[in-house]
Length: 298
Image (cartoon, rainbow, N blue to C red; front, side, top):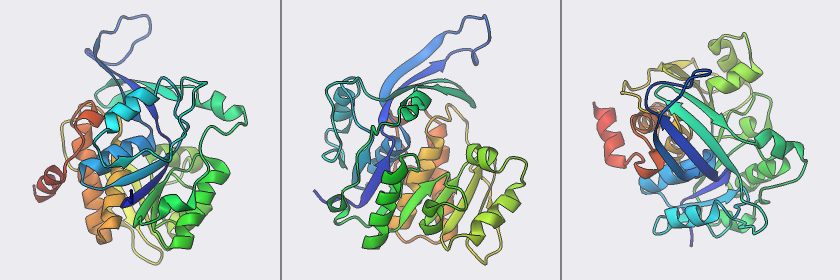
């Protein structure tokens, strides 16, 4: 089956726990209000959101183990998300994370440092045939040489791609149609630098659109040779921030796919993210196109 969008990156099972009375405190009991096991990861969440927006997706990336596979297959049954490229393995439970959430605060837990430290590959090698018919793509930056291969396949086919949290001197940033840079990324790579200075550095290195998100603060965005532009996030009541950045990425892919201007793309992605943080759990109630358009209209 052909798809509008190709996604390559992190796909996993997320155990999310919404606490009832505020975030965890040392030596204090916390009551779990809600608990779900649903598709997660930057690529898994983006696929869910894009499907809800009416976009067909083919996704690839993380190997899917025995504990994750049944949930993943059941969740995407009947949706416009093609899982045929994934590698379903039978000798490992699969990659999962655990996220504790209370309003604006969340804490993810997992074994990713241990997994990466093994030096072994636990994700697929991108396949050129998977991009056939696709008009846009999104590539997560985590999977070393295979990440670069995915980007090079997109470039060879003339398929514009969105990436996330890629530093100014990286291949992914320099060749991306859109690079969405989070506060976590700027803190890691550009500690102590003002957002405007980071933005100027990013703009110098690429012809694509760079967007710096700052949680509830203004988003900065622009291209090489342009003045830095700003946009405020949409004011919404926050229920959970889990998946906010992944939903923003999905909104950028949608904007790219539909040829939106930079202003419209950032506004659309921000509206998608705003709806996402107003509900929990996101995979069971992702933003719909009519909702996004209504929030933009105000």
